[in-house]
Length: 313
Image (cartoon, rainbow, N blue to C red):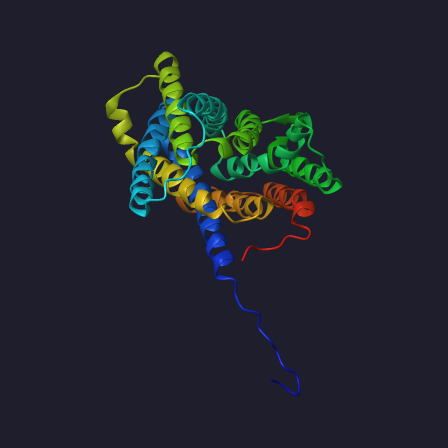
């Protein structure tokens, strides 16, 4: 109480705070992964890198399936099985195909651009998702159109220079954002129908195998060079895929999708930080302004969904 006024601090919702911290940790891990991916390209090709890291990522998630199966047996309360083995494989192959296309274009693009720029351009999937949803009968609000304009303007400042030409790497990463968006839409439809962790393992294995097969045709694949890239591969598989994906799963069990999307879109900022700390990348004023506009667009595009948002608990 100060000068006759009483200040009441509302109780903190620890569940919301816990979920937000898990989502923020995911954004940090994914953002710093762009620097790791850039370093990995100094030793091996993009398809080899993706092939090894996604297979190892699937291996890192597999123990969680065993853990939850044992926990279910101990509780003696068996949960109903979601989907058949055939559905699980088909859905995993579909999600893995989108993942393969998105990851391949992104990884190939990172060879020709900076980690920071790649992080922000990839984040445009937050804006692209609702527009692709139009073809599925979803409605698109005014705020999402405004968000799209802001993001596209930011992309122009970030990537397009004299002669109205976009850099090769930026264009490849931009194309990858459409497949990340398609992956998000696909997961929204198929993930409720099958076991989430099993679906994750299958899609990562599918993506990893496709990447290695492609690498076998167009890249030199050698154990020695893979071992030389073990640090970025380790980070990209166990941290970016294994830990971050698991945190996202647990957090989004209760977090509002739009709320989660906004926090996860912060990965662009951490991509810039990672590029600056580990790779010495520095953005000029024009690029920084482009990043700011793109981030604003991501936030605005989610504004209509956030209106009236009630936190769980």
